[in-house]
Image (cartoon, rainbow, N blue to C red):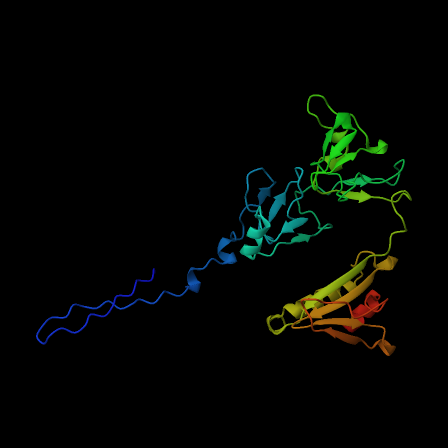
Length: 308
């Protein structure tokens, strides 16, 4: 209901006269929670046929994060592997700042494909003559369908930063005069799909031997999270992963770090005697730092499990 402009009170007239009715100011209506959109009202009911999603040039929202869909990679990674916090990005930084909409990306590089989806193709460079994946010299972006090759294939322009790069000899390919695409594009998955898994192992590409994976579990222990059961569910899921050896790389030296947060950050040091765990608090959330140095933060999955 639109607020009405105030009407000044009519001064009293002489006795015996009829006073006109006064109009009081109508206070603005409050927001009605019942009329506000809810995610549940936008979700499709159970049993709805699965949707097929692939990116097009027409702007449109991706499927919900909990939606049941089949994604197709036609040169851009599907939301199963990369999802932004907003579907539209402002052209100017000032507009983005004024909107106060958080801008971030959620990456899930090893997400499992759903039934009906093709597996992520692999690009094996372990037997290559040298080097590794083709990358931009300036921003280090990996080869992707957006790289624009020119000069007969001897140069390419990075679609991320615009840098013009020389094509290394091991990645050179002539261009199709009809399409302008690389002649080997059909046999190079990195020039067809937005998601690929690179397998590297040559000494020319790796400066040092690959380190075992390190995992950090961050758990919300605020009062709302505890009362809703979310904290207990997160701890139970982490315990299940650690107890059953589901953690990738657990047999090859993987390490685990634990962080909890509410109005402060809590870091856990599991190096104490007899399995005792020490908690370090960081009260500054705007400028946090790691209070544990060396190997104190990361521990074995067994020690992390004992501290949960």
